[in-house]
Image (tube, rainbow, N blue to C red):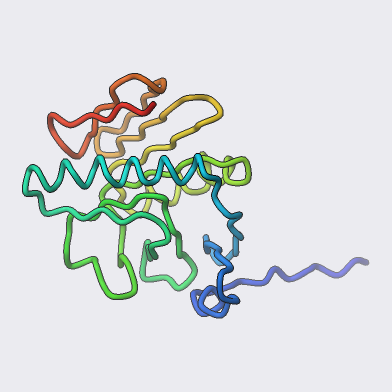
Amino acid sequence: MQALRKEVEYTIEDIYALPDGERAELIDGQIYYMAPPSTAHQRLVHFFDREIGNYVRAKKGECEVFPAPFAVFLSESSKNYVEPDISVICDKNKITENGCQGAPDWIIEIVSPSSRRMDYYKKLLKYRTAGVREYWVVDQDRNLVTVYNFEADNMEEYLFGEAVPVGIYEEFSITVQ
């Protein structure tokens, strides 16, 4: 008879105990280590941060844009902690010195080879159930932006070079090159 292996469940405290410079996310008590981002990845993060920030500022909007690394605690549970590439938060009460307590309104994840399964599957489910209103998966390998508008309960895909409408803002779209 073979003994059952007990799966270890991690918490936020384990994330905070990681060595300096090591980044990881915590989903349902499991730690997922993050590889350093590529230059192309960082260019896209900067692009989105700038485009969204400029739009919000021009419209005198209430939302704030936070590029990674920025802590998002999706629920009260100490078993979920993520660092989306871009988090747009419109409820100022969710923003604390430690990050975002609860679901951001809009999250953008830029796919890297090591994060593909996480971004398209695990995070999709987590973000939807946590109350994120809109989730974009930006896939450089496929030149594709997949938009999940959870409020409208739909998903659409846009090729790089096409204007991608932003669901949480009327009259705002972003063209990813």
